[in-house]
Length: 152
Image (cartoon, rainbow, N blue to C red):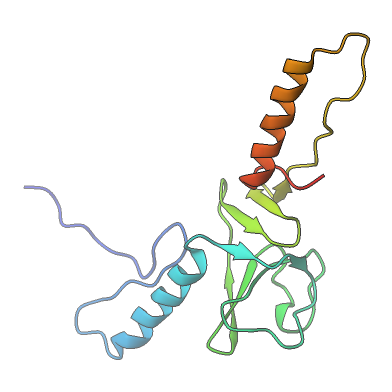
């Protein structure tokens, strides 16, 4: 017979709170987990900033910049999400991706946030191969449409 699975107080990847038998006020733990899941599922951020917006809306998320202040003090590099009139901070994990509205594309976390840089469409050269150039332009266009590359 296998050993029973022992739960810690939170999940290892994103720190979602776990429930325990006979726990008082379970709704707080469940609601906190739902708020974290809501923020993490298909995450979209408004952009990156070090100062919280003056009038944020619930559901709004931001990457906290390198020198945060105000409600975001000491939260550099985290993701700040507005939930229930308060800021909820998420610690990114290696390989996490999100859509950055301000940059117009995807950002990936790998020891810090990284975004693709715009790619120039081929122009000039000693030999022009119209079919190759058209294929490359189509690939770039599709990558921009999918949010893999930002708009040039």
